[in-house]
Picture 1: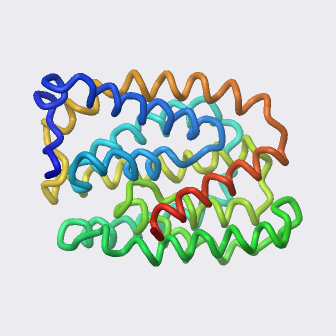
Picture 2: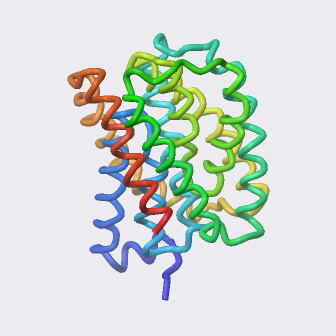
Length: 251
């Protein structure tokens, strides 16, 4: 039986709290290192112990914190022209996804997401990530919508947005910075939608508060690694994470 996600429950079970903190730390270490993945990793692991409809709003608040901190750090690296269609598309997609999350079992939709992710990774490996063709900005709108839907359903719209930004051939820090701008806009709007739909409440906000230090520590240490790795390692790390996420959703 899956327990409800409350602060009182975590206090009563310190080992469970330690597990959650470790998951959040690892997820945000990855987020700072390669620019995305915190939501997908956190939701995938935390939903093993708690209902996905309670996990996703908590992870949303943690992602909002991550977007603000990394976005402020990388502000001058953001590629504003790339955001002109990605953000509007993401807004449309997250509204669609929030409604679906409130009225359906989001976990029943994961197989399609897994197939999409693994198909993209296979294509990128064949084409070589550093040699993939450069796509036009026309792809920003549909992939932004797709990313917004996934963000609402699973706590992170990374895969479609990663695919677009990789095929725009952004330098690693510009990639990370631009992704944070999209994530920040999505996080703010999703928070409003979740409150309106009754998915985010004061109890879940308290869980976020006690997990925030673990996220902040992961971001701090992950940023140090981001600054040291080269572009080739960065690209392959993003694909490696996508493989893990895709297999999880497919299986």
